[in-house]
Image 1 (cartoon, rainbow, N blue to C red):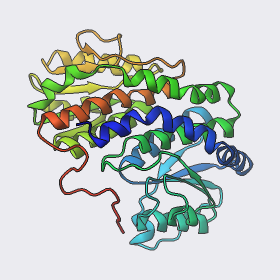
Image 2: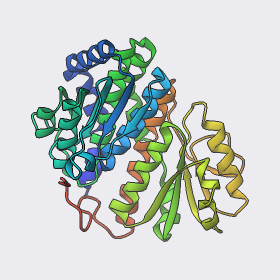
Image 3: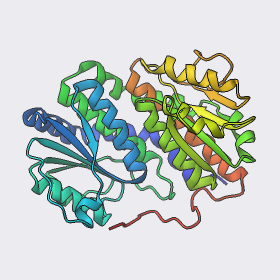
Amino acid sequence: MTSIMRQEINQIPAVASDLLVKSQGAIEAAGAALRERDPAVVVTIARGSSDHAAHFLKYAIELELGIPVASIGPSLSSIYDAPLRLERAAAIAVSQSGASPDIVSLARSAKAGGALTIALANTVPSPLADAATMAIDIQAGPEIAVAATKSFVNSIVTGLAILAAWKKDDGLQKAVSDLPQYFEKALSLDWSQLVAPLATCDSLYMLGRGPSLAIASEAALKCKETCELHAEAYSSAEVLHGPVSLVAADFPIIAFAARDKAEASVAETASKLVDKNAAIYLTSSLGHGPKSLPVVETGHPLTDALCLIIPYYGMVETLSLRRGFNPDKPAALKKVTETR
């Protein structure tokens, strides 16, 4: 029987297409509002997979516009009740449910502190949508499996579309509009070579740099959620500053490298780790020694990075079943996590 998680992964191209049609007006309005505000800084508000989506958008905004982006801890508002001074800022809040009290509280506080606050949510209307200056429905549709997949992808697609409208970047706009067809291609990629070594291991590392580090973080979370497998994400630069000490023979490492300026750096680190007889898998042909994972090349570094998560999602769903778990209902987790 096909899992709900697998069904939702397969829906990614269609829901991305729906988003780009149904939320186009709201995306254009958000881009125009950001252009008018011309913020000196952008802050993000999110947890879990949504925070990984926000991390991806952090790199995208910094790379494309040179505006610094920082994540704000929701406890500043929900626990500490600390007022924020964000008169020259924009805030982006990301949430699948739009219901977690601490996320809603911080979005409300950011708006009260003067920020143009934009909510990216899969539930509109919702408390988060009400708390923000403006809200955009990411149009991922009902997501039943506990582990977020299509809502993670559509959150990033929404953010990239807003960025393209904000910057008036025709190249990025085209790359985003072409994503549904590239997502279809990514679904057909075979990463099954990872299943056997990960089925019996106790721990692994995910590596990335720039936007692909956000993808590595999301990949590590999915290992924990669906497979009860310990995984940690590191920058390909940071892994050599301590974590490499745990790498021994057959230790699995997945290195996510997009077709961008960081690709050679990620590949170089992955190649160095081969000397420790680790089991290295790399999404690039630039490495010397790692096993290659197939990728989709979209023609834009940001959309290249995003496409890396889709074949991984397919693999990790298979891995969950192989390890004897139900990928739709991980133990001790629920779909909407309400933290304060």
